[in-house]
Amino acid sequence: MKTGCIYFISAADELRFCFEPETHFYSFHFNVFPASGEELFFHSELLMEECENETWINEVSKAFSEPQTQVSAVCLKSLLLQKIAHFLPNRNVSGENIVVLPPALHMFLRREANAQTTLADLAEIAGVSVDTLSRRFSKYNHFTLKNFLNHSVAARAECLLRNPSLKIKDVAQKLNFTSEYYFSRFFKRETLQTPKEFRISSYQRS
Image 1 (cartoon, rainbow, N blue to C red):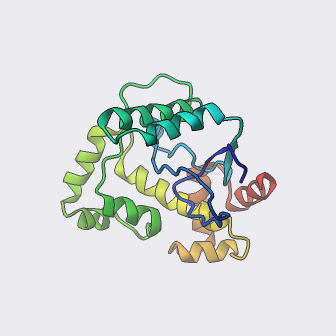
Image 2 (cartoon, rainbow, N blue to C red):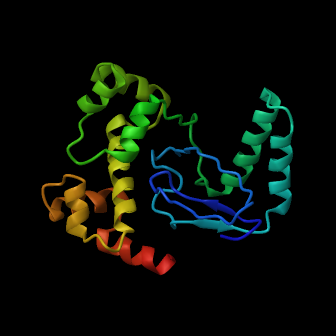
C-alpha cells in the first residue's frame, strides 16, 4: 500500500495489515447496493487502488480536525460519495436502495451465511417473523431478502476462493453445499463465472 492512495475492498473480504510505526490512515466501512442487489465491490479486485488523491485526503483530514457535528458528518459522507460515484452503474433507477437489517443479522450474513441458511434462520436472528422481515426488506430495496442471502453466500465464496490453500471442494464444504457440483452451479448463477474461472481471474489481477 502506498502513501497518498485510496484503497477499496469488498465487505466480504477480511484483511489484516501491518503498518509501520506512526502511520496515519483513515478507514471507512460502508455498503452500497445498486438496483441489482449486488454489493458495489462484489467480485472486483481484492484491493482497488486510486492514487493522486492528496487534495481529497486533505479535505478528509480537515473534516476530522473540526468538531464532530452533523455538519462535519455530512461533509465526510459527501467526500465518500464523490469517490464511489464513478463505480456506480450508469443507468436510471427509481428510488435508492437501502439495505435495512439489524447489525447482528448483517454480521451473520457476512461471516456465517451458507447454503443451508434459510429465511427462517434470518428471521430468528432478527427476532421477527419471516413475513415481517421480508416485508421490511422489500419496502426499501429493489431485490428480495432471498436474493440478498444468495449474494452474501456468493460473497463469502469469493473470499474463500482467494485462498490458494483451499481446493474448490473445500470451499463447497465450508459453505455447507452438498457437493462441489451444486456449489459450482450456484456460484456460476450468482457471479456469471465458475469457481475455477473466478480463481484464475483473481490470480491474474493480483
